[in-house]
Amino acid sequence: MSGVLDLVREDLRGFAGYASARSTRLEGEIWLNANESAWPNPGDAAALCRRYPEPQPQALRERLAALYGCRSEQLLIGRGSDEAIDLLVRALCAPGRDGVLYTPPVFGMYAVSARLQNAPALEVPLRDDDAGLVPDIEAIIAAAKQGNARLVFLCSPSNPGGSSIGLAQVERVAAALRGQALVVVDEAYAEFADEPSAASLLPRHDNIAVLRTLSKAHALAAARIGCVIADAGLIAVLRNCQAPYPIPAPCSALALAGLDDAALARTRERIALVRAERERLRAALAQLPGVRRVYPSDANFLLVRLVDAEAAFQRLLVAGVVVRDQRGAPQLHDALRITLGTPEQNARVLGVLATLEPAA
Image 1 (tube, rainbow, N blue to C red):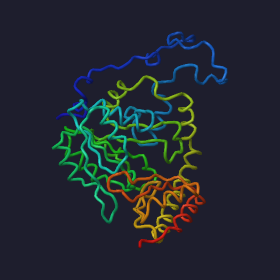
Image 2 (tube, rainbow, N blue to C red):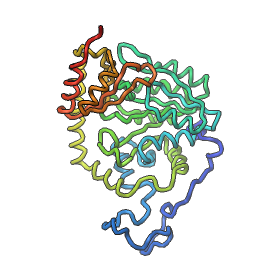
Image 3 (cartoon, helix red, strand yellow):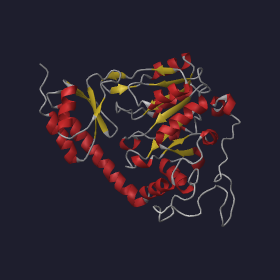
């Protein structure tokens, strides 16, 4: 039976990557092997940045593994989920041959990474029905088989749609594409949803990978820390394809502080508040005459169709509120995406949108 490592590009299966000065396990008191300065920068009084950081900070790796319910060797830390997406496309897709499948309207970096790798893009649009913007699982499987997909990206909860994909559906795709494709579940917003992580499927399906990030629920977007969770052998391949020092030491230290028990307790409180505000705002928006539809959401945002999206966007700007204009995305010619803010910020959004005129 073929395994997930058979999905790696043939020319990279024996690739050892770059052996950095920090990748060799040596012990010593005086470190003169990396051409670093002997003195800290005057602006770095604590000398946090004089030396190159650990390629994969072990303490952070173990903390993230405990948080996400996997083993540390199944997890690779990178510069947000964006780097993980790029690594997966570069490591698995031979240019011009292996396809990347995604489900628009969806996060744009899947398409960007495919284009940069010259990987054929396979689009299977989300269905717009009573449940929201949802994936067509059978169409995804059929398109992946017909189009020689090597990677299938499933965003759950989806951005900008907000809907989650059930584990049974993820498992259906993984089972159908075993030996052909890696199914990548992007769980950037998973903390705001009830659906269990697809990482729980890894013991049964080695052709599943999961993306997680500290940028959303954990409020560390500027630290640029995310990770990919996958089969340990695939993680080793991705590490060899990664630049040598992806995580700056100050960002690693900040992440560890942000993941201690007290910080996690505060984060859980804020997630609960966001979820409560999500339902309150959704119900209130649905009553406004200028709003056509508010999609159900398992994330920290709402996708809203409006009678006059341009007027809504401009009035919000005048009021000092910036939202995401989705009108250029497939199927979303009249939609804005509104991130859940504080209750006071959400009240301002409601106040502005309440002034919109109904359909003529």
